[in-house]
Image (tube, rainbow, N blue to C red; front, side):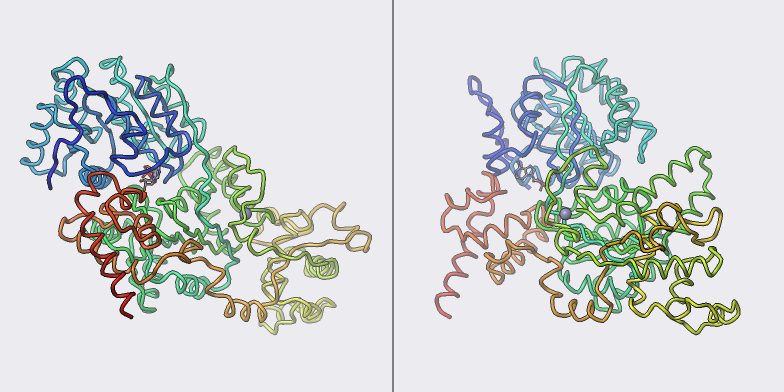
Length: 631
Ligand code: ADP
Ligand code: ZN
């Protein structure tokens, strides 16, 4: 791969401005959110902390200053696979980048050292161990020139936090950078935003004087769709039907469920791979590699699959089991749609998930106080899944941000539920709980109301009760929804230490309702029969695949461009998105540029890529024009 010293400045030449670098090197027209302020701050020599959601655009916050300031930018990153991707992507953009980590051959590291010593690098990626052990720091300090180091960037900076979910002891020692290189800007970056982690990063990396930059944590291109779980397997298969040909992640609770779901998806003809901590390291990295290289792979995984995925074209993240907190949910779903194109976060949830999660917390080694926190986190997640309002408003509110209007891109906004007067069914349900002795769970109460003829009901004599079989006004799914809603509103509550049993909640609520003095209106799903018909009518239109922009994109041209990209990626042994992101190909297929100048105006095509790929792209576009003209 050629690495022409495109960025070398001749004496007397002005350093490029951040905007020039953004446009000419990266091919983007403007900065996003707080990027511009951060870049200016660092170019002027400032240090700081950047909090930005996954996919928010953290990399450019240090890559642009690296090219505006003299010297090499040293980027500390914990994940070798990510470093390799970043270096490859930068080389494609004509930026002189290299990495030093334990995964390199001795020739490869020798080459990186030579470039570093000769002042031929704009960016050097290193693992924290590599930076701190051995003599790399001394060598950096001994580099010639007045300003040999442009900046230090500390990626995944939350790894410094012992409270966080991904503590790495080496990170703590990074505090030494402030002592040894007091005049070099240090930029810490993370997508984990809670205030304890934030404070810890600032303290440990000695960023007190630095600034904290917080981007919005909203991910507007992600559509949140939650569904009540009735048949997770069937629901998942139907969901995936609309996403064939794209990549995504399916999260499940346990290894055995991961294996089972993966096998079922394969049986349904999907390209599905299982990933969990029970697999051998080689097998795991093989799965990760296929996921990175291929644009139509579904990985079914436990939460072990997460760190290190910066694949930009993950089109969906599906949860068939509840995650353990809203933080976890947001992080896992955040892996979808990093490229900014439409993506879906889909989850089926139901009360059946809870007993096991609760037991898991209770049986953990954690202190009593910690276990209580875990239970509270789970409660917040359940509150989110049951609440009637806009999903995004609730999520952002949880993270301390306010969204003034409902988002229009979640199930609550897209599928408004009409309110139904449920006063009578609610009375029946409360009576059933009372008559059966206030100790049975939802499944049994619904069985009684629907007049189910089960062994258990006959044994308990519940078929003799006046409430037996009086509930045919609702179907099973509707009854389950009503139970959940009455629980979240406080009409019903769990029996203390009862296994899922329910008893009456506050008398001040229950009594007036039973006496008919208050009415209750709640959203209910349509009856199951109707739901099935509606689903088959609208399966393609409601669950978004490529999204609305797809309308202007010439699909056959897009396929040719993707085939061309696959070939380029294969020849150079890089993932396809290192060549071009989907977004760039879509823009090409929509705008059909016919000259080098027009190509340069496409997002994601900078000077180096224009030179390398421009003729190839124009040839494909011309061939497509000819084919269109002759047909
Ligand atoms: P993060 O590291 O925060 O998860 P990345 O730095 O990988 O996010 O950026 C996510 C995606 O957004 C990348 O594909 C990147 O090229 C793109 N991107 C970042 N900033 C811009 C911008 N100003 N204009 C257009 N695309 C951008
Ligand atoms: Zn919404």
